[in-house]
Amino acid sequence: MAEVVGLDDAPYPEPSSRASGDEALYAHLVKVGFAGPDYQAVADTLARYAYPILYAWLASGQIVQECAHKGVHGIHRLAADKITLNHHDIDDLVQDTLITALDRFARAGRERRGWSPQGGAALRTYFISGCLFAFGDVYRRWERDHDRHAPHDPTALSAPSASIDPADLIVLRQTLKDALPPPGRALTAVLLNAAGYTHAQIARILGENTTSRAVEGLLHRHRGALKGGTQP
Picture 1 (cartoon, rainbow, N blue to C red):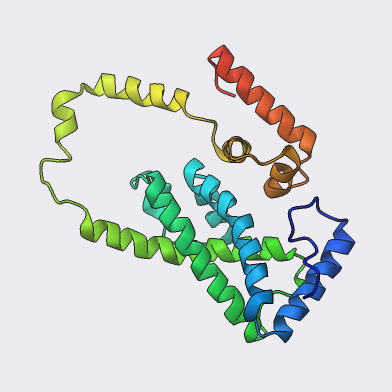
Picture 2: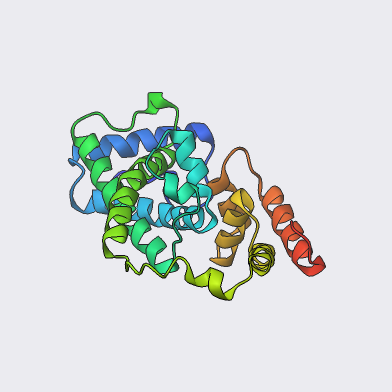
């Protein structure tokens, strides 16, 4: 099998080396028809790479910004906080997204319309973009199923107002907000750090020229803010 340069767990090589490695790897996948043990090894590596990123984005809400950046539509209820996801929902969505994204990745490769080194993106980055487009379709199906199986209790929406004063509800929401980790990139870093990722690995996932030192500073500020009772 061609060496999986840039897709292993070791530190990234130089960009030129990573690009040539991605090109050689993809050419090998084309040769084997995106099937068999060689393809499965790459697919497993891509899935392991993408899973914590997608999970962190969904848990933090950053998935909304990432989808908007790629022009992925149909998640407006999630963006408007009208849908609440628990960890089971997130896990299901991530797994279904990965299954869909990998299927499309292989199909596009077989049809010679997949990744190209001329596109400028690393193979991992290309796959993450594919995951975002897959998520849009997976989420819309999930939302339809969610609405279909949700209990239709006409008193459910009015029940909270009967027991919670609106002013108390505002205070409760602010208290919960203060207790939650910070939004966006910071929360992604916090979640990945809690999952055991190194500062270097987190920096590569965040991208945008993020360094290990920047991640270390971000996490340090977050811990300090929690101790001081302020927002990071």
